Length: 270
Image 1 (tube, rainbow, N blue to C red):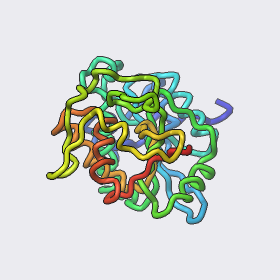
Image 2: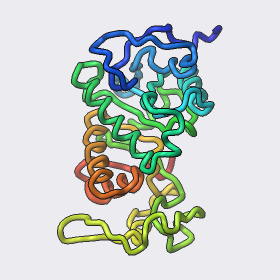
Image 3: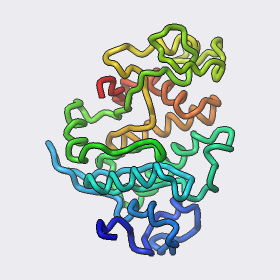
Image 4: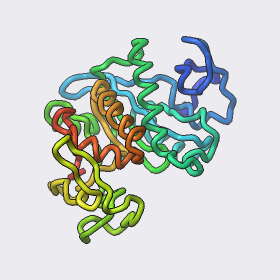
């Protein structure tokens, strides 16, 4: 179309993206029904200036083709100077809705894809990376502005967006938000912080210091160096697999246990 939003009908993708054994560098034939998604993969990185020019890689997850939210994210990203890459297309439509532990899939797949792309040299460990949910995120500022805002944080943290609701933990105070997940996690459930300390689900909403209006972590949008992403994803996914917690709950536990070690920050003033 006139905005040149669609990719060519044949693009090169990592075999893990489509869930097929394609072999390194082999082209995947893609039909026209993938058009809206394939603005996405035309090429995986873009160079953004700022305090230091660098490659930035923008990933999202969806299992639905097409999805209006994903199309809106892809087109807004393109209009503002970026390229969106999608994982999750190997799953049948509706997987997120019908699979009992479905949301955790996105971080498990993301770790696999990013580690693969680093291993073949397609992306570098010191590049910047963004991950956004695929159905309810819209780009509103240029990537140059986004990177400039990120650069104001010292020491290149793993930066998580903030929200006003304490999810997925039970609420005990109005400051914890209006949407109480109730019994999603039993209040008397406890989680180890380290071998000498445990914290209950009921206490987790009080555990995050309030430094801005968006106090609580929301893993629907995060940004940081690729190597830091991989470290955080490894911790998060290990918790998901070992402790039967959903992906957002697991990220809370990563913050509680490893925030200093992994230089993690919540953008409470975004």
